[in-house]
Image (cartoon, rainbow, N blue to C red; front, side, top):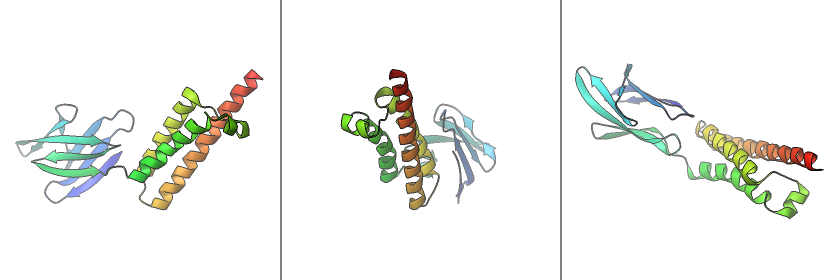
Length: 164
């Protein structure tokens, strides 16, 4: 995820964090910072070496600490974003373990259903964090919930076709 912030002292700050690997790069006023450790960088400001520390990540919110000043780059996940994403996983967890519900609509549960649902929940949170509108976040959540349920249903039907 790429974030661009304008700061009154440091100018344009570009923070890029890979959604998959977590690799981070920071650019301040067009100068890429030199990485010194997993969360440490050095900003060369006209010969002055300023240490910069990255705190957090995409999921929990990211900020940088430079000259004892904390600059928020990625805002923390809201409680309702986390609750929506978890509900995708919880629905399949419960539905797949209740025989009466599986008799109505079979879905794959257990490790396979949990893995599929966890992937959908992760992607749901990623997409929800990228939009500002709460209504659009809810539409994204409903879409991921429906597609996850359909995929788990499809896998269950495929598995049942081999058994029967």
